[in-house]
Length: 526
Image (cartoon, rainbow, N blue to C red; front, side, top):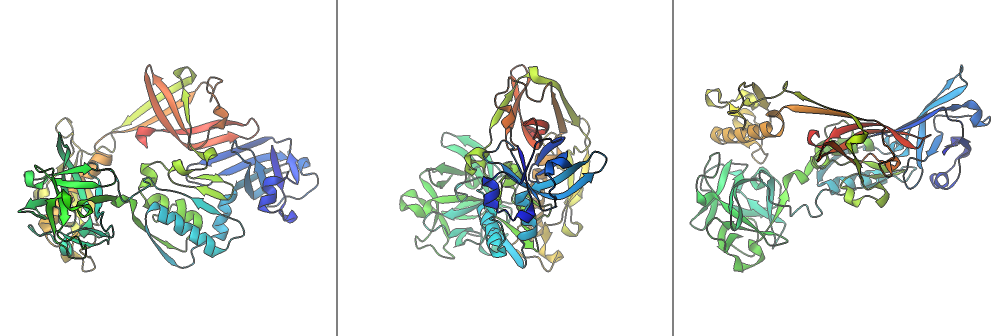
């Protein structure tokens, strides 16, 4: 059923949800709703003029349509077009949440610094301060219920927060780059001095073994005569004194030196304050030698200057939440709208009717499955270039892990303009990640970042998979008409092999009340 409300009636939002429209469109020629991931939702409806019963339509009129959600959704007409030859109207309308583009605006310079949840809270504050006519609301949570205590993983970049006083972190004094500098405790400030990368180097009966790389110095943390200091400037830990066990005790970790599981990294004073030296001590001293691990990527900074709400959430601007917080793409967040409510984040916290579902399709319903492989952008070696054109000695090439197995190599020059020496940029600050005083430390950091670039995106060929079905959904797929944009489709592509597809775009036929066209992306290609 498609209802139409006329703006001159001054019908409120609550009334639109409860009542029938001023007219009900019973003879639609076509009616489609288009849902695109983290983008504007719209409908396009063509209907005979006679359905208006002599009333006048405007670009503020509102459609109420059933799109298989728990309640009908409201779409405000952006423009109506009259077709004289067929005596019909074709109307394009956007979901009412996107009215916020006109009503909710950042008028001042707004710096947002924090987690995904903090960004959601800030966006809701902006709504409140804008005093809009409609009750916009954003609901969203990040990946971790407790972002300050994430799991230990290879190459994860982290801060170490002390359990006894979580306002203090493991810290390199003055972001030093020198060997043998003893680490300290310092109030949490999320600077390069408190930023470390975990590197798995083995495992044994006590668990996985890691090196801990200080990213302000590119040196490994080392145990030296009971002190925790900066160690070697090398590709991996140079010896056992630079290796550590992470022992999970449920709510935190003990960080034990390799070879002595009964000890842990510990601030030298239980009265934790700035400047406490960091040592290794018997774990019996209590919570002071327990650590929470905060994922650096969970905390970002965005600069919202004269943005509307949609730009803040998922605009094309670099500082939108979608582009700034990496967990949005890494965890495949899909914004789902329920009239004036927006659910954006970890779908575990969505309203029950908006939670994602899984659909399973056998190869009997599949008419075409093709996968193209492109070597066009494959790079097996990089000559990295830092700020001001600095490169590694002798034009050193950083090689991909598959360098020795590939017959042909493609070498590229890649610029890392945010990696710089203070000598090259008088405005650079040592507390900023990627800024160094010594060229040897910069070179090591440049090597690390280049290897990450190769592993993440460059050394493997890109694939592009397309899929078509005999019927979009046959009777063999239960509840197929209930498909939503954040659902997953599992397809049996070969005997015994099932692959997961996500939706980037979904077209829903409002007349047949069934999905009509899907733009799918294979999970491994996201």
